[in-house]
Image (cartoon, rainbow, N blue to C red; front, side, top):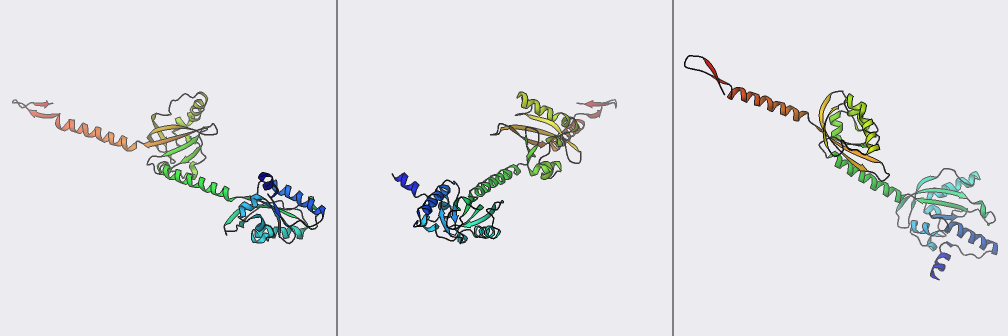
Length: 303
């Protein structure tokens, strides 16, 4: 019984004290407005709200009784302006949806997408009825803001790595790159994103990289993933240098794969090893290849 009563009261209108035909039109309007999942209100020619559905009540924080009889301009000035334009142009609707703001009872400003039309179905009603269709964009904006926050946090974590890092899709296109990669290879972030990862490969590896990637996608046979591999990389100026590459695989929700690679510049490591070898050679020469004279004056080597 309560459910039936709630359904009957889902949309509140001004008192129906007109003819039986007027009451039928009111009921028809109730059905139309109640069927909308998004906020929707009916407005008379003076801009007064004469009917509203529950989503509109929820969005604007008024009770149904408070919302009906209210000037639409006090909630959404743009809706009233568009209504005046339609009336002046004698048009039934404006094709383009309006992105605007509306004000709730508590004074909170919400972003909405607004569509306004003169509904010809109620031509028998005593005055023109305009229907304002609204979509609450604040939820979408909040969701977008959260996504942007997560992306910013993720990028900050990626940038915290001292080693160059790349994220590529299964076609080799660069989707993610950190600051260390830009500094090491000499490209800007904008130059990297969208380009193929073969950009940083030496000439021989660049020619076969895409084929290796396609082979892995096709067969699943791992040759690089999960292992560290020495390679020769290439900077923007064409200079080649030795690196160590580590690659991990990420399975995306859409079924595709993404690959994350960390590149460690081994240039200094190789220089350090060369320096150690030279020092070892010097030590061998100084301390284990000494010469001295024997009793007859001949020189001999002491090991």
